[in-house]
Amino acid sequence: MSQNESSDAEQVKQQVSGIFDGAAPTYGQVGPQFFLISDAV
Image (cartoon, rainbow, N blue to C red; front, side, top):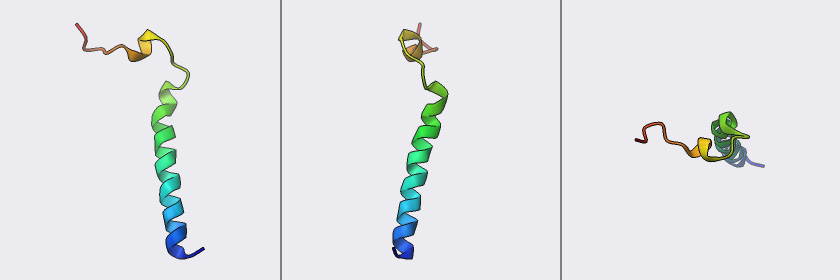
């Protein structure tokens, strides 16, 4: 594997990790309260 391929793989890992890090706080939340918008009138 070349240095460039290694760098590309690391970028993909970081992107995927970022997606899961963003979703982690809401993991396991289901139902209407999850989709509730606090600014709704």
